[in-house]
Image 1 (cartoon, rainbow, N blue to C red):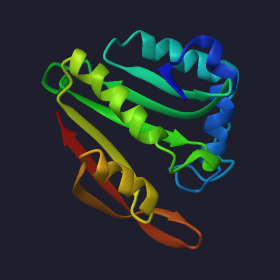
Image 2: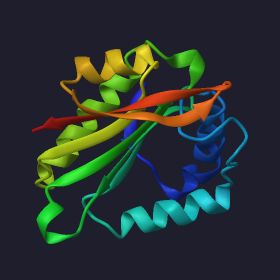
Image 3: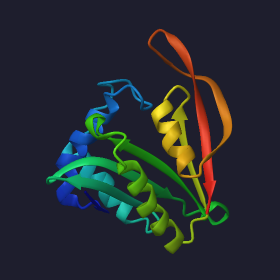
Image 4: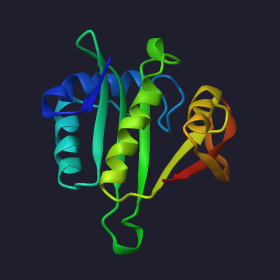
Length: 164
């Protein structure tokens, strides 16, 4: 398994991975609600490259992408020290250490770019993700009660953070 910075040549495979992960039901979009394309992903990668604290990391195995982590840095003076995280791992590859390795590589990048505060949100019933986030040192800061509606009911969203 290789953890590396995503490049524009990854756009098509990364879009396919985004779509697969979003169909899992654990992301903020409903399955099929947002379909990423290679062209959209290429533009997103270009935008992220223009914001140096930000980075898109991917996990590759057997020449296929099986995970990603996006760190979105902030350029405003008062919040330049903080960044938001979005992570997704292919369903067949969850629980194999990919998330841990993506977080470790991201933290190296964050420290190099003087990012002190890492933030993310997660659907409250996503036990596997919560386990990973706690293992990586994230703590729950708050609950956005009944912020999401799917499967015929309302769901809470947790806000987590980690200080480096």
